[in-house]
Amino acid sequence: MYQRVFNILLVNFITYLIFSIAAVCHVSAPSTRQYLFDFTKTDDVDNWQEQSDTVRSVGMSKAVFVIHRNTEFRRAIFFALLNPQPNGAGFAGIRALGMYNLTGCTKLQLYCRSQGQFNGFKVVLRHKGLNDEPNYSFEQYFQAPKDEFAIRELPFSEFKAYYRGKRVINNETLDISQVTSIGIQMYGGVYQPIKQKGPATLELDWIRAE
Ligand SMILES: *[C@@H]1O[C@H](CO)[C@@H](O)[C@H](O)[C@H]1NC(C)=O
Ligand SMILES: *[C@@H]1O[C@H](CO)[C@@H](O)[C@H](O)[C@H]1NC(C)=O
Ligand SMILES: *[C@@H]1O[C@H](CO)[C@@H](O)[C@H](O)[C@H]1NC(C)=O
Image (cartoon, rainbow, N blue to C red; front, side, top):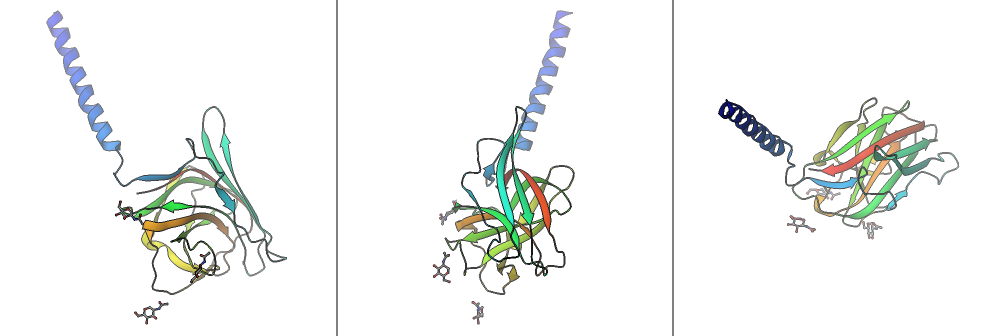
């Protein structure tokens, strides 16, 4: 009798062990995965600076980036108010300067959600310390998920050179071994089919590369 109970427990225990090991192996990250910003843990927003179109008399846009937390969770929120010119020129954004060597990774991933009428954003990368104009930026447009949080994937191969929102045809590609500026913008869409204006929000748990 005791022997039988013991055998059943042993079998259960071994089954549990096998499933546990399988689960751990399954979720283990690829070796190249890098969290650039994990706002659910310790990363704060102090090293992010605003980059919005505040130069012209029209096109006075505003962006802020803040940590949102309570006892249950922690994340960052990007708030933008876009007041573009009639043709859509204008942007509201934030960026972080740093030195990121993403060699071996193929894409950027953002775990995010957008609420509000407009959910079109772009990620703006710069490399090799060429963090300001007249140097090009490397940009990719994306639609943020609207209701549930989800991962948006931006392949590095799809980051194209832009100058002031306009695509430039050059021979240079983004050097992911030396990314020195990472930005997020709500765009007016001056050279895009879709124009946006007004308020938008992007809640963000993390940005990682893999
Ligand atoms: C980036 O990382 C790769 C692989 O770890 C390394 O070979 C390369 O020298 C690094 N590049 C820079 C610019 O640090
Ligand atoms: C921009 O690029 C030019 C060359 O094209 C370079 O001389 C200049 O230092 C760069 N400036 C910044 C801030 O990126
Ligand atoms: C791009 O490459 C072509 C052919 O190699 C060259 O003629 C041209 O000057 C290059 N353009 C730029 C912007 O570097």
